[in-house]
Image 1: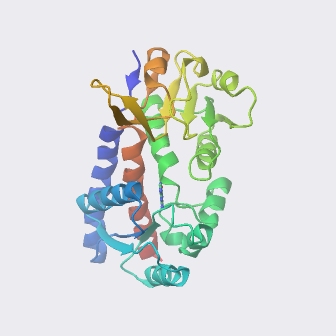
Image 2: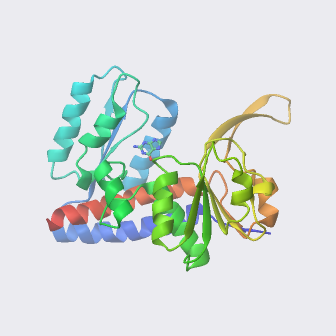
Length: 292
Ligand code: GUN
């Protein structure tokens, strides 16, 4: 039976460290590390994510500042809010929840956030710095995956990692971080003709495609570690014959688990780690900003 990597437990350890560091920060500087979370509109999934982020921030001793804007907010208003948060010395981290409503320019907002406060790690300055090994704020989801992999394996050097998916938020930064840890890294994607065959050569498979249970046992070498980044809502028949909404990953857990060395569940795997790393980034940003 595979080791079930419990993201909630590992995230609690990360958050514990953040809380300790936040107390020291407040003692040293007379204010709490501050995280501003901006939500535009009423997307139900985004509302849940934002609520969780605010709750974790408060529990970790951070000052969380929530800005909720109407769905019809114009670009200029959002630009101005970001400019105000950039200039506010009590704000150390800024997160604008994505996706934004269609009439707003996401790339422009990502670029408008001061890279020193970009706790998502999405600004091109942070993306570039990560890739050339300079100090940056690193995207939260791949950072969370790395922490879990390091806990399971200790040393990652020399391992072959296959990442399924090439998104800017997960696949590409994941490749940069695994490369930095001296892994041999392969990215496979929708145009890769022999993706399963390549994945089957991997010691570590990171699934980040956004397709429910796409990865079955035929993708996984016996004894490999599997990190499932996917969060997909599917409708499944329940006991009484009615359809029930269920959260599943990109990995078919029941099929893959018997032959994996270790595997993350969905929910309760990568998800809690992403939020914990957001708090960690806020603390890192706060320390660097106060140092300046
Ligand atoms: N929407 C879904 N995931 C994320 C994330 O990691 N950051 C932001 N800003 N929006 C998201």
